[in-house]
Amino acid sequence: MSELLIGAIAASSFIIGLFFLRYWKTTGDRFFLYFAISFLIECVNRVSLGTLFDLKEELPIYYLIRLVSYGFIIFAIIEKNKKRSQEK
Image 1: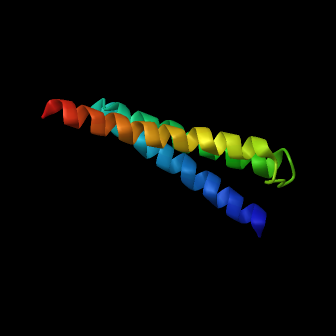
Image 2: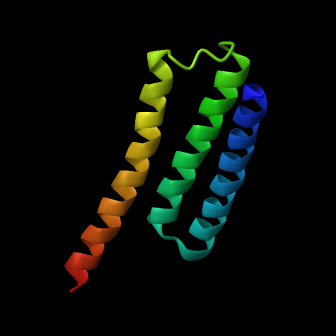
């Protein structure tokens, strides 16, 4: 059951990453690019978790990768808000 959930999360992350890439291509806004990178990193993380290390999620490298992935989201939000405050 656990492998199925990890596969579903990986597939969902990949699809969401592709959607954000499409929005980035149409708008040119880096906000969408950072979100796409974040979700694609999460996809790779989940695929590697399911295939390489036999579902040993307690390894610190997985949490480091997630920290980097979520860092992209936080950076995108901060950068977007910074631009808005400079426009006013």
